[in-house]
Length: 135
Image 1 (cartoon, rainbow, N blue to C red):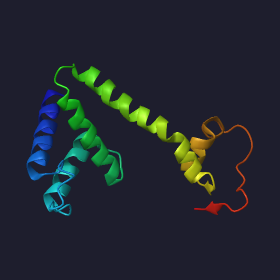
Image 2 (image 1 turned 90 degrees about the horizontal axis):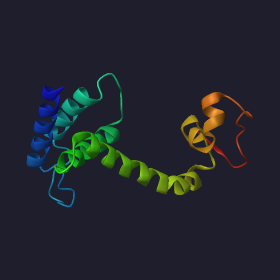
Image 3 (image 1 turned 90 degrees about the vertical axis):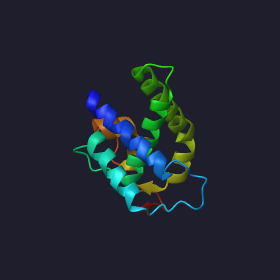
Image 4 (image 1 turned 180 degrees about the horizontal axis):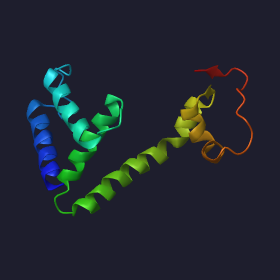
């Protein structure tokens, strides 16, 4: 476990050196092969056994870097702090998410709209609304 944390710190440091976190720099080559290599290594260490889209891996890298930057906190406390902020941002965005997706029928939207019905299989069967885009 300690060895893995050390390896992840090295990956974060390499990403910093390559300019991965310099998002305001227009001259960064975002298609750089090294970014993919380091991202794949991070994914293999942290998300082994899960096939996640790259944007989730990138979010994980950004969040782990935030955890590492909170040197005045214990790692579990830093984790709770960073994950808590992510959850708060998601909750703040729920209304906009619902507004943007209310006409789409798909399991990923339905779980946000009707979580109890979707998780426990209770309630009415989801019928597409008029003018609904079915994906």
